[in-house]
Length: 228
Image (cartoon, rainbow, N blue to C red; front, side, top):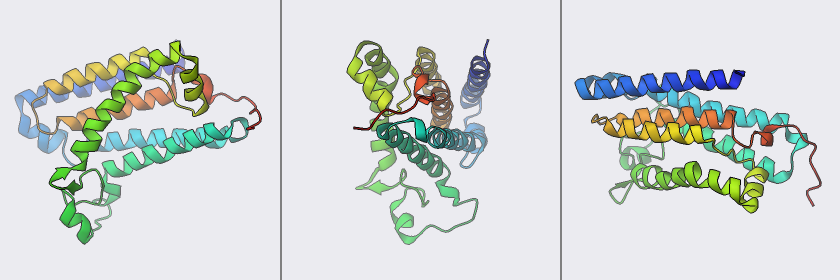
C-alpha cells in the first residue's frame, strides 16, 4: 500500500465520521448541529476553507515546479485552478472579514443576504446568487465532471487530449462513489445547515482528486514540446 492510498483511506474515514456524526446530530439535536457543529465560522466551515486553499496551493506548487516542463495550455489551466480554489476558500470565510473584524461596505450590507463581504450570498432580484449559481449550476457541473468526464476520458481521444493539455485532473471511480454517498447522507440530514457538511465533503474529495487523479501524469515532469 503506497502513501497516497493510505492518505486516501484516512481522509475517507474522517469524512465518513464527520458526515455520520453530523447526521446523528441533525436527527437528534438539530439546534446543536446548526449553532455549534456547522455554525458560521465553525470547525466544519474552516475545514472546507482549508481544503480549498490546499488545492489552490497544490496547483500553485505544480505550476511553479513544472513551469519549464509544460506547454502554455497546461500553464493556463493550472493557473486557473490556483485562482478558482483560492477564490472558493476566500468566499467560504468571507475573506477573513470576521477574523479581522472588518465592516462590510454599504453595497454588501444592502445586497448581501448575510451582510457579508462575499459574492455567493449576494441577492439579485430577491434571488440569492448562491442558490442560482453556486447550487443549481454547480450541481450540473459536478454531474458532468464526476460522472460524464471519466467516461469520455476513457473512450474519446479528443477529450483525453483536451483534459491533459489543460491540466484538468480526471476523477477515479472511488472519488465519484465517495461524492455520491456523501450526497445521500447529507440529503438525509434534516438540519438547516447540513450543506456546510456537504461543502466540506466537496473540498476534501476534490483535494484527493488533485492529489491523485486518474491522469496523474499531467503532474509529472516531461520536457515540453514546441508551443507551435
